[in-house]
Image 1 (cartoon, rainbow, N blue to C red):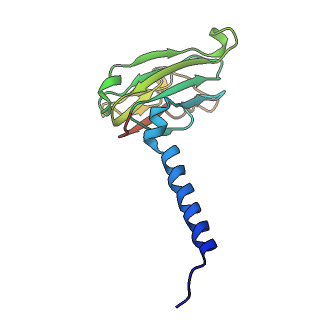
Image 2 (spheres, rainbow, N blue to C red; image 1 turned 45 degrees about the vertical axis):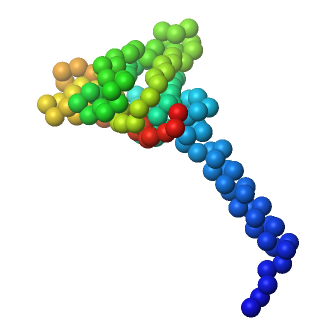
Length: 162
């Protein structure tokens, strides 16, 4: 049987210790305790990026609108399970209406759940509570007659030790 040298054992122990410390430092619970704000961007086009963001309970999400047009964050309460943010209907100003600066909105998520949202200027809910592109009843149409895709997103809030 081959013996492990003292030096090898120390190196393995040090690596394991660093891995444990790294897991503690970057754990979702530590992330939430530090009050880290996760970001959803609106680039210079009509979409939320990323479409889906995962955070831990106790975290905040900040929407930043880099588009010149204003947008909104409207909760789709039929699908939302984050009771804290039901009924949200907030304007997210564009740079044109905000002195050339990106508009921002921040929401806190204290409990686990799902927060489905859409922009009421670029989506509406169909009979199944699904966001759909505005279509001929309103909204923006390009030269080829396309009304685009609905502008929407999802925040998934995982349990955390906030």
